[in-house]
Length: 330
Ligand code: NAD
Image (cartoon, rainbow, N blue to C red; front, side, top):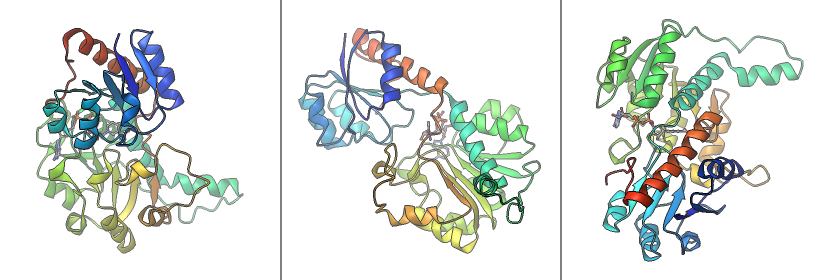
């Protein structure tokens, strides 16, 4: 039995992790986010279980290592919040959940596209107010449009397949071409081609130092007027200031975000009674052609079951072998 400090716990994490654990390991559920202040909560634990906005930089890792923590079990796919070099130097194993439900995220990306295109957020409010006018709700057919998928791993490949099903011509950019995508007619090319030609751009690549602010002013200048941009990957891929300017000029016609570069200060909590201090975020909320969801793309029953099962398996493998098959190499 391994003792694990589970950070950023919500009721749903507790429910799904406890069910998958079946009392194999000692799970200590902590509501706070993992950071320099809260790391001490894990003082008797051999491992920590962390989520997307938990802080696992060199300082937090050093503190955890002092406390004899040897495992970081991420209950997510992305690991941009972990200083892998620091974890390796501290002799820690970093496990993750590489694939839980690519469908959950890809389907949410497409939900954002359809809602923005057909202006469902506006239509919903109008009808509730007895306003059945259609002016301002004009959409476009997805069929025949060029959809650019950036990153065709697990999630991007499903998004490409769904978009192909709608009759889109799917363009893709990835550092590695996906054979399944190639077989289904996805056209790979340089990212430049996507900037120039795509009507819809959806991001499914991980965030790392080289692609931070992948969508910035220079990229936007090369895109089609009125382009739709969807980001369900990581907030840092989009320069929010540039996106706001792009929305003001009309270069961006539609923006769908499930992630935001400063989301750790906002998401996963009810802040409806507090003052929003993030002026960029507040500005984004004023545009009628922007839909933001609070990092919920992964949030389906199937995905939570898989996340919990894989996380518990990673912990059990660590207990047996001192490592796990889903360990990330630093
Ligand atoms: P994956 O590893 O299966 O695929 C990522 C793909 O991106 C790979 O094909 C890789 O070659 C490619 N890639 C890497 N660097 C690139 C670059 N600079 N430019 C273009 N392509 C690049 O990952 P996945 O499971 O498909 O997840 C993708 C991302 O989605 C994750 O990194 C994570 O950030 C995000 N995600 C978000 C949510 C959510 O709830 N919003 C949930 C899960 C994952």
